[in-house]
Image (cartoon, rainbow, N blue to C red):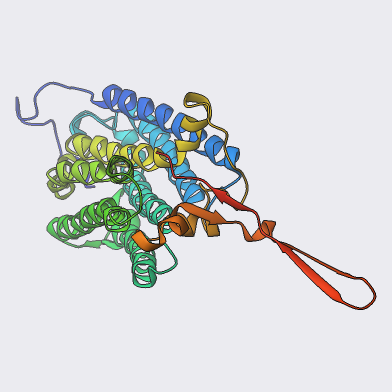
Length: 354
């Protein structure tokens, strides 16, 4: 962000002294309130089946970051940071500049954590035979988090010293604005690809399951909602050019900030809908839920693994039934001459419901 040009702006060149701050604050805080409710319901649902996992904690980190973004936007609005830069009070310019770059850093951080949450959610669904899918997905999660967080560093090293971003009057050297814009295009394009990859991957997992077509379609829709974040990111990418307009960064980045917050909001909501299924089953369908690490909703249980096996007509009963190893018991006794052993295994038949 550069200092405002000397003197008043040319007559009529920037238009009236419009303040976009109240609109930005209203949008982001409505989103934040809904996001908080959704994540609380997500954890409530996990609590019902005692199955909190890594995907939930990644999503909680995303929510906390999103609330921090909303608070920062509200503070920037109070400084007049969404007006044309000529109309921002001179004493506020430094803080406005700092907040602008803090918002960018927080947004990039949330992109990484939210995609990690979606990836970890999909890992819960993978059957034990999906070795390559599992490790490919792990590689995508790790690289996506690393790449997005690396972009935070790049954001602040584009000027030397970094504080020249909000104190342009000090001696400094900066990359050409086009460099940051091009880096942002690459980063956003990569995140779009990952959004659609994470949305479409469940289809390859669910298509061969031994369940009705309706159930498979419903599951694919629920797990594919993250493609909406990709669509939102496509809209956002059209506003990335505003990052290169350092002459009026406060006013021109409004659309970019709103669409970036909307993208994070959509990921939080869409990625939290599938984990809330136990709430639907318990309070809407009035269905009794199984709990604990062996729950059909849980990750890593043998019940879940059998349920996710591909369909096979000759072994269809093994697909829809589950053997609970934790309920296997052994008993040994002797009549003086012979040692006998009795093994009991409880077998449960639980078709998967959507």
